[in-house]
Length: 338
Image (tube, rainbow, N blue to C red; front, top):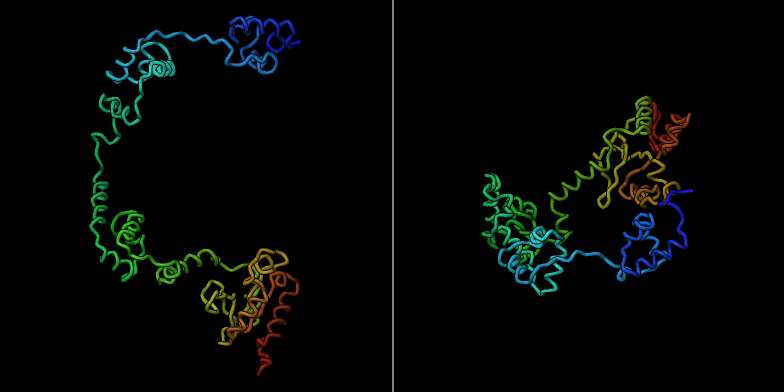
């Protein structure tokens, strides 16, 4: 059997609790009388007794304060409700309730802040400290943007081809300041297509793509193919690092090209990146049929070797047969097209 706090409630306890609540006792007094915790009495009231919280008696200590004293402390002396509550040994909510009863208007946040600053109760972090020399120089330089003329801004943006970010850096201000000034002067901005066609933007995009797309070293299948070519003196040169692009619109980058000037290229195809059977989310320009058509369009003869074929036991013979089938001379053999 549990103790008095965890034992089940009896009918006698419920009846006694309801009588005590109706006669003006609080939940804390009921809990103390029945040997229960206040939390247990509250939950029991929610489930069984159903005495509405507004009908429950509350013992609030009455604060005796005159309207005139409250107006003097709040408006004339500039004390806050928290400070007045400390004087009367009560809470600031009680003071606010009294002010509402007396019809005393409260201050706004800005008015309260001014009173605190005037009374020395609040000070700015930079008060009596000031800005550093570097900050003052930046603030002084940023003011020059307000003296920029329409002709100067137009010349920097359209004639000299500077980006908005570069102009903002030149004047030590934010990009939005330059944009707002251009709107004020009715200077038209470049379209997205015009911005993308700028040489500096193209170069930046190219560098970003080089970092994102191309690996810093050969993959294992590429190394296997390269070793086979070296062993049989097959003249293929590695260009998979982005050193050669074929095509104009959406160009492709093969892995190897024939080093004797013939337009033969080799691509090592990974199943995950190029097979729609394994990866159904790949784009069309990564699939073998698309790349085959694209290379032929620009006069190249493509040779595609899958990664799994380079991991076979007879990978060397397989590669030699594929190259020979596509017209590549191997170990002194004459090209079939000669």
